[in-house]
Image 1 (cartoon, rainbow, N blue to C red):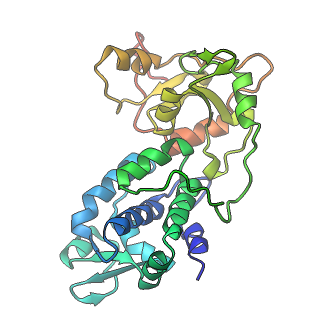
Image 2 (image 1 turned 180 degrees about the vertical axis):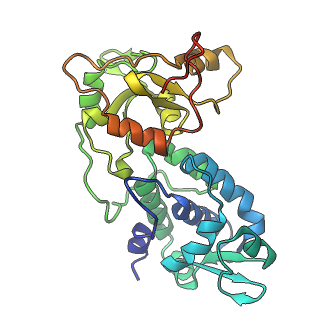
Amino acid sequence: MDWLERTAKLRQWTRNGTRAPHKPLLLLYALGRFQDDADGELRYSAVEEDLQRLLTEYGPPNRTSPAYPFHHLVSDGVWEVRTTRGPGSPGSGVRDLRETGAAGRLVPELRAALRREPPLLGRMARLLLDLHFPPSLHGELCEAIGLELEPTQTEQLLRVRRQRNPQMRELVLTAYEYQCAFCGYDGRIGAVPVGLEAAHVRWWAFDGPDDIDNGLCLCSLHHKLFDKGVLGIGDGHRILVSQRFVGHSPAAREHVIALAGRPLVGPQPGARPVAAAHRAWHIAQVFHGTPRPAAGTGRVPS
């Protein structure tokens, strides 16, 4: 049985690039728990809070119950649920899962395959990460789940839908003249830029093209905050800062909150700015909450 193919083809509700990482997050969580206890079950009432936190932090802005993937992942052939009444999920309702003592775990065939071939777990996890999340979030997501992957593991992921453009980073950094589009940071060691990265506005995992008008040159801090939905880009290519972000230190105010309403730094004349369609996708699928008013104006950027 090809477990990587099943992993790559999880049934998900998709329309116009809508993010639906509910099943991938649950499967990643289950793989992490398998590392700790290969024979253990995940009782819904015991893991509901963990799963809700993952959905809130790494899922789309709209709120979803973890009961949904706990029930529906059964249909993909990698997950099973039993209750005090016997095998089978009672449904996707939170009350049904709680009251019947529902517990889930990886199906016996997959558990056997993971015991027989330990590297399979890392391949499955990396495939889920690559297909559903940007690289800037992979490390912290594994840490949040408690999933340990060998840093030297370099297996080629199967069935990746298309090849990345290796020139994307250089094209984007050149377009923005090696400055962070949010704060203007332009650090170098000699002639080599440090702490600058090419960020996809519409994530590559969600058919975001490797084009300049889907890219931003960002420092490492602002890249992470952009991919976490703290920062966005509004009309007029002005910076959005989520009202959900809380920071009381001078550094948080200076490097994040004070950005609200500022225009982007760049790109240079002749380079295409971020396309409206990609900005709209990021606002709908990644940016959390409503924007803060522009600093000193009281006006909320749109």
